Length: 433
Figure 1 (tube, rainbow, N blue to C red):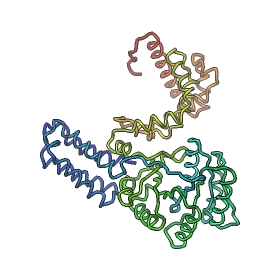
Figure 2: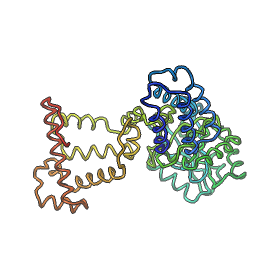
Figure 3: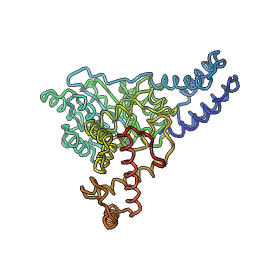
Figure 4: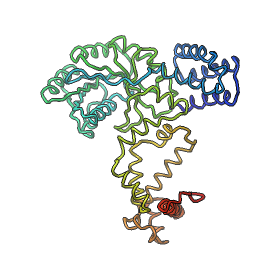
């Protein structure tokens, strides 16, 4: 999402790096480039103005101009200001009542219904007992979609095609209280654009629920239109926060950098993929690090701890160190890694990650998995038995070539050599591995 902005800011910092000292002109030139980069990223012009003024004021101070590492000081100032305009810290949900009502609102196409299910799954993992409410009767198949998603995550969905949204919400409150549910997530009606009828219905639902949270789901791809929409919803409903979806897309980043400043309300979650586990708490400092190319190792560690089977990972590591790692184990590792989401999102979290052709890398991983799947269990556990005829069969079964199979087997043999070296305490990696 932040690739273009990241590249432009990197050029700015590179121009400052390596200078023993920088002048006021150097600083002003750099800030002008930062300003243009933010405007091109569709950041609200008021946000850009205040951001630039603050950075300029701090960057022209004695601490930077006389510093031995002025480029690092400047980057720190930019980072701190990015964190400030995005909200300083993570704002968790404030669930007071039991059941705690969460009202999800937004325009059509923002991913609101899917986000309801993602939030329910996240809260369920945290030990909550949520109930979903299908109160969007206007978009075709919205109710069916939520019921299907609810089944996938094991969360009940209150729905009724013969009742009004208000009647469904009233029924859901009774169901939640009688069945011991502690969170009520209500998927309200969206529209293609804001209209008075929709707002009145939302206001009526709000009166019934007295919600602990009213979250507006906004599409990161909408740019400043999303910020303008947020202002209208906030004026009518007094929002408690936002969920910004499609953070894994190619949006320029303006929404995430503007919405807190413009409305005063925090971003609480970000949608990082279309999968039902693709919802993460929003941390301004971590996003600032990503924008500046510093990665987000903390989020990656949390994701690994949450998504991957720790027992499997431990066993695989032990096998590797004992030089017993097979292609069967490698297949398991690939399946575990897929839980972390697209390769691009993983690389984005690693500081200084090399620029790679992510699409090509994803294809290579899929090809490797297809080749291993085409093998018998015996072949995976003992690749030494794979002769020419077996290679042809594996290639046909995986839709690849014999050369692709040979490449994988060669890499595996190199990996075995590495394992043996590690087992004997000689850690030098063979050339070309």
